[in-house]
Length: 172
Image 1 (cartoon, helix red, strand yellow):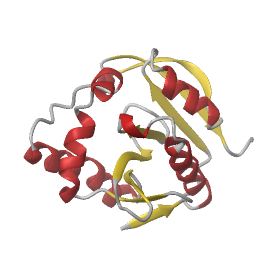
Image 2: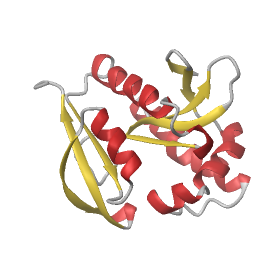
Image 3: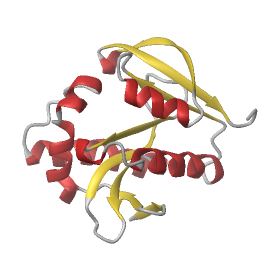
């Protein structure tokens, strides 16, 4: 199901048949370094992770991580969307792209559309983002999206310290 479109991208619900892409993404060295090892090793693991993660959240809350595809070719290049973690008081934005698509502005384009959707359609008044303290590329993107560093937090599921960023929308 298409959720959003931008000039160059289509953001749609991730499905179990996207397991090959998901398996590759979550085992990229950058994912493992900055997001963490989710223990997804097989296509069956990937299908289960998709079903119990993004698909379940989309069904339960009406939002989740979306698959980002190049418009016109349907080539999957990354994930971007809104997440509600038990360990954070507010919704946060998450994103991850295959390395060969870094530096092209796709993450900013997708994240900007997701934020606009969250504020206009879902009525979000506050948005958070987390990243590992040494992930300078994500920190730059998060700041470019208008989120400001708030504090260092320890989130059990992240396995260590994370930088927490916040943006309020009722006080732009």
